[in-house]
Image (cartoon, rainbow, N blue to C red; front, top):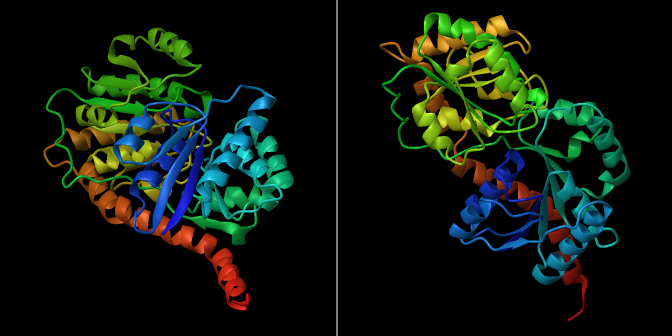
Length: 375
């Protein structure tokens, strides 16, 4: 049995954090024993503890001192646990791991969860990889489309990239569609790249056909106040609910007929869309990142060009027509696709295989050294 140290920035709700927690709780315990090191607490701690996964939370002081403190925490965990592999998620964790492993190499995998950046962050990550990437044993991608970004924009070597598409637990049957008026759900941080404004722009077209429709916006961020003001200016405020950060996505999906995502950049292989499909809900999304690998256009939902409010409005109407009609198709097809293509048990097995592959050279070298060492 082997040990993997999973390092992540915090235990707050987020895509990279969700990936880490699923990894820690779904791996085959007869093959890999996970241990989590996080630099901030959050609600995911309860999930890990319920699964019996050991968790260490080390709060960092902030500023440049965080880098040194994070590296020290990783070195301490390595000395105590003697892991066979380190799995790092998010730039803070990546930096801490790479600093900690200077002069003391250990098999490691860095997971990338985005498809691009906004503003200066892309340049920053390219420089970061150029300066420190030689210490990375393997890079993990969460969808196949992402490889183009990792090799083309970040300059990462293709032979050190492995793809394991995200997955979620899929129930035995899709959740029944709600009986009330049409409800569309969006689960996303309220940042510019998520483009909630486009959804609000498209919403009046939905109300023209479905006057009683509701739009639920789960999430928070720097654009929340602007979006609330925009809803008022468009005359749709009474039909839009700003829910803030929520931990009950499954309950929200049971209340909804359809999920919408409108990102124009960065989006890769979002758990929100996976969860919607697993719940038996159609997905309307912009055609960006890895979403074409996830949403079967016209079968499990609809993909539209980014920044196109008219196309998004038409897709929302098509999705609600389907979900409220006599024979809904998108949700059932999405559930079937999630069950068949993205099941959590197969994902966990692939992760175990990937981890074995990453540590194989070190194990081989150790076995060869043992054979050559006189008894």
